[in-house]
Image (cartoon, rainbow, N blue to C red; front, side, top):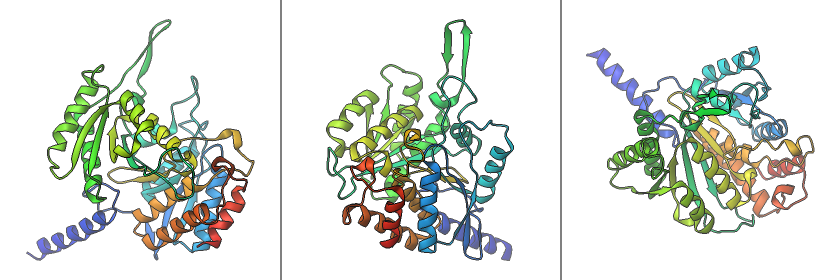
Length: 368
């Protein structure tokens, strides 16, 4: 009897902790992020291109705000082989800490090993990618009142990595869609809508052509939608979605889609609100969470020039702090970024300004 009561008490504590993480999945995960003496340990992978510069900005802001987070940094590159010891150490760190913050890793085109980003998500089963596209006050954009969330399935679809040359000059690339993983991402999207007071979920697909693969995705999402009568839903073919996004983006609230479509739509979303420098993102799984810019650009062309916009990585770290239930620090940093952009008018070149990464970071620190 006593053991039963103790177990119920433990389960209630776990459930309470999980429900407090507004963007994570509700699962029986009793092993949370690593916290010792009130300080969390987070795996940091700056990434390629402007990664080192934006990661330095995040560390400077965290230090100034006295955020109780320590980083384990791994300077991986997209050119790092999969069997490299540093890559294995980084994966071990993510497994240990449960939470990571990363920039974008370059993926070689046509040659080389498979993407570390894809491998990491599949290895750790980080299945839900979340990118929030919302107008930022003071930043000029083609549309106003834009505020939608893109939720993409991270572990299958066209990114399954199953390609082969069946005959010289003939390549077959397999797209994998499964009912269990589609159900999982659909429930995540509808749960997200409920928790964040969102009214509608749009299912994005190409079932008119890929009748089996996208047909399975669409029909599975429709079935899950029936479990959420308080949330409206509709579905839209992906090419029409692209047109609707650039003509009337205000119609979208939460969007759920397979992997490749999510990659394309998130870039459209970034273009709508001012560019990839201001779009935060996150990736969630049953046990792990990794936070990275929502529009995945390496920006190798401006590497080392001190002109990079660190906002997307800083705002991704704000999402991370909320996941760690450090909301006061998250609010403080987010408000400082917004004030720097909208009130002070301090902007990097990508947003039409002339301030350096260092100057922008110092302005955020002054606004803490």
